[in-house]
Image (tube, rainbow, N blue to C red; front, side):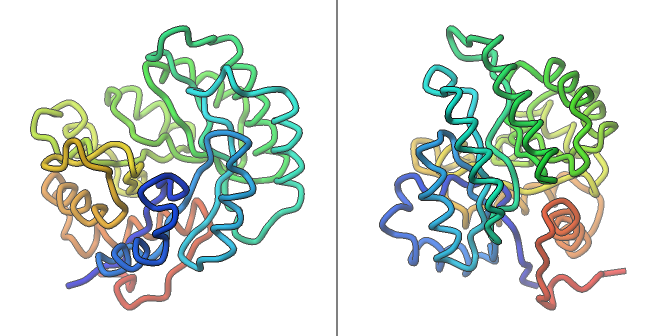
Length: 269
């Protein structure tokens, strides 16, 4: 049986997709990936990602300032973000990629926290969910999220923390992004966590062209490989594949307001 999927985190404005959008979307569609959410990483990406989303029905935009580029972000970029959100483009569905990162050298963590708090405030002002980056910063991030109290919540993407950390995010109303990490047999901790979390708290993502799956190391990741992440998830879970596919798309609909009327989304219950 074929299923429909949403890649909730794909940098489709990066190579190898830019200049090859139509063919890349066709490859994704053939694997059942019908919708792709494209987050920005700097203010320079705001206009191009919005344009991509307007041009291609399968693409949806998220605008935000990524913590890895903290030294590039200026205060006027927050003004630009606010202005872009205020126009409320129809294909703009989230604020992201935003978050915290304590893995990189010289993280400028105080500045990261200031930028994140400002963007969370904008997400609250414009009633949008958030796409959250977090490396070695889950505890600090959960504290900021509790303080921000966003009505629409969001998703902690590429999660690789502990079960207790995941449960903290869930208790705050956030989803957990499931990516290619679970395709690696050695990633036992992450695989155990994802196996134990409620299915209603999970979203699929590739983070393409990053986070290559097992067997594709050294290659650019692609949205069509979401189907392989789904297969790996099915191996970890007790629920039937049809139920998993249906619930994942329900989660997308609830968080982002995206809805598919495909027959594959009929409830298996």
